[in-house]
Image 1: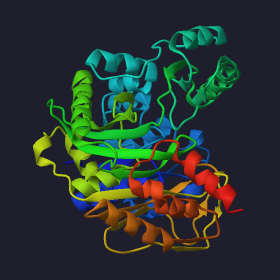
Image 2: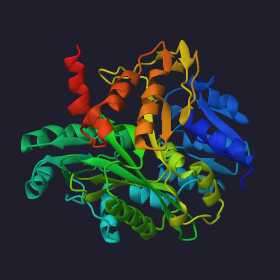
Image 3: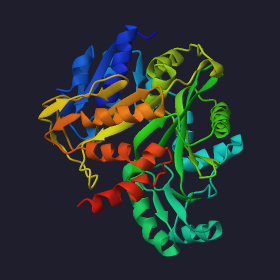
Image 4: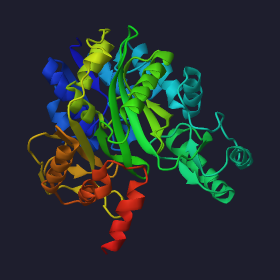
Length: 452
């Protein structure tokens, strides 16, 4: 096993990786910006180095400085967490060129899955169902118009290099498409340095369901069941659960098979996630592949008993997976909610100082966060400040536990989305187990207007 690794991330995911390393006796090196100097993850690491000013492009995205620190600290490997540089093929390549193990898939695989257009082509070759659409970049409004006429409205206009809903928009007519094209292309260029756009047919009543996989360097791929991630705001997930309460066992088996087929086809290794859109008839279609650990990985850990970070480290040093698909049992039900520093009515970020903070406790409750009373939530980073997870032997018990925990989650000094989450997990539509990606628009937002 590694003796020392550098964690190229911040906040709760940095602390999450540190905890597993502490369990395994691995020394950890944290990096931090000037804004994070007093953070818990910095204190918990064995060593910590400042890598720049608060803006991410001057600190957490400064690949050369991070690699310099890794070499200076004599770290053997780099764990990228999620977000930031985790799916940056150039960074992964630089790590390898400097004698550092990148804890993730190869740079070539990251690059191939980083382009949604190329990923669609690859999955079609692998025999994985894809949504009807185009597999080439749209260079102009006229090209987009002609492509849309062939496919038919409604459509999803998407950025090929996109993520987090950026550069993605539903268009119901030619007028909406032409109005959206230039703005989304420019936004994609700004966020990702790549303005390539494409179109996919819109799936009505879509469920967002993903399959977690682990793959080693010996050709073994194991699916770790699936997660339902349909409740989203601004195309970003806020509630996730495992297993999905929507799909039946036949669909589940087919989805797991498709995920394994996809991973084998590209020669994948380490942790990854194959994301699907599922329609109301339970037909499923490839959406994208995340070549990293996901924010929502704790719900998979809760129902399988695995430590996914530990498994990532084992794969990275060349070990074979110690279990097969048949060995991974599904135990109970787990629900995760993301706690954001944001106005629950507008979803706008709400930075500021946390004056009082208390985590909920109880049977089946797990907290993933790296804040405390006195912590400053800055405008420089994603406003997610933590994750709350509830496990129960049944979905009903998990629902009750997550609701009770949210009601006992105390954060003062800033606005949070906790009121929104309480309304969500208490709503009869959520409790029924049938939620689509339109849940927030259909059920939560009307609830706001009716209670003014």
